[in-house]
Image (tube, helix red, strand yellow):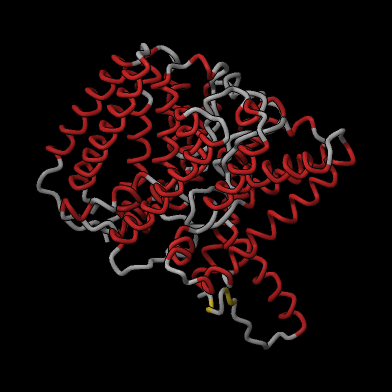
Length: 483
């Protein structure tokens, strides 16, 4: 049976943490004397009240979470955070429609970065900071944050980690998952602070630097400007953000190995090699095509190509140029980049490079099997044999990912949305990218989409952020059967 009392209690605690986040944003509103101050207080009051009631109602629950509990908790936590997180947008009146307010918040917490706002600069500082904070917290994971503190409440975080962690394998660098989470959060925070300083050196004020650092390390892409990073027209800022987007796309356990000077583990990692060379390859091809098909110089073509490839492969979604104005061939290449994604165990979306490595090795082995039918050809990654169960999971994930994209596109087109926009929105949402194609590209918001499409895309964002199975399991009859 599902331990609903424990789940309700933990979600209540999570909402109290969200209350602290809302109060932090109210401090920003107070500092800038903007009109969202009271709205944050109201939102914090509602969220705190709901959190306290749930925490009290969940008293007496089991202290150990099962794997099933983990899946239910993670899915409900993301929905609960988005439902209460939309309150500042809705109560303030800056996003007066519930559909749009929920969409904007789900986009933030899933670090997608798609927006329904057509005039971002008109928002008060508090709301802009809240948009950035949702992506920073959601980037590494609400639950990843929580398991660092769950032991304080006598609850094991291992099953939660298994449900929330991205990728086919879940690496731990310490036997205690709570300590692993704290180490990873320390690196995440450190990267954010370093980026804030570097952006301020590039001419950004402290507020924009913090918000863009949140969106970069969280690979979310919410900017404080409607024109995104292109607003600053600064090669320095573009290169700095490109570097930190790339770093944020690396598996955080590898970053831990790097910090601990285990450089060989980092250099020899197959997924990191795939990630690095895919960025190099796509950047080179797009830069060459861009140079010969537009009036840009060599350096500008390289910089725009590098920024856009890293931005989309890491699912950040920042923009320095409207790639829909590039030659259509480049749209196709960037769509492939969006689907592929960066590394598992990072803040990014997409299929993840480790799955691409496994699929490539499985495909290569099939060619060898044709020539040598009796040969035993294990799939090896980083000199370790990948178990048949993991290979099976990767193949199932890939199949489901493609089927969901196809079904999503057909549903969107059935709503009367153009093919180009449908393809872009669905791939962008399930991959947590942000910008799409056509009239939902980097130069546009998604405000014009019908409400039904926004709810569908919000669901796809959640599916993609939680790696499909965590959410889809809840819709299977077997999940709810007594065992």
